[in-house]
Length: 198
Image (tube, rainbow, N blue to C red; front, side, top):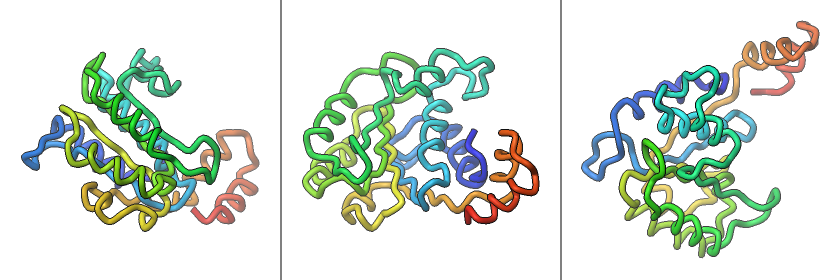
């Protein structure tokens, strides 16, 4: 469970409890936009939510079940992740078309088919236009998550079809606790956490 984003995670838990996505406005939204500064846990939260939606134990399995293990390893058949091949590189229309094809396939396991787009602001305008088709007509109970630190880099037509979930900076105490757990001196961990600015 990602640290420091309890409000966002609580909202995702409520959505998961509401049931499968529906065009009638009930249940989970088909499309979410995870927006916030870089490095605050948006992508880990997207993977955590995928586990919550696919895991028979609601991501509370210990040790991790096969679904959670595959999602963590990036090899789950029902969870597709689209990201730039390298930092700063655009995501083109061909990658989006392949994602649309994958999302049209029947689910292998329980829960919805899930698409996560990392650095969604790197989608070219052409790719975003193609992506609109998926947002407007999502197949079955599909769930789509766009992760970005720059929502303004997305077309308004894309943003308007997503429910936005905002992520803020991670509290100093949470950052310090992670550093202390990793073996750092508590005072040095506290100073580093303060310098990290969330």
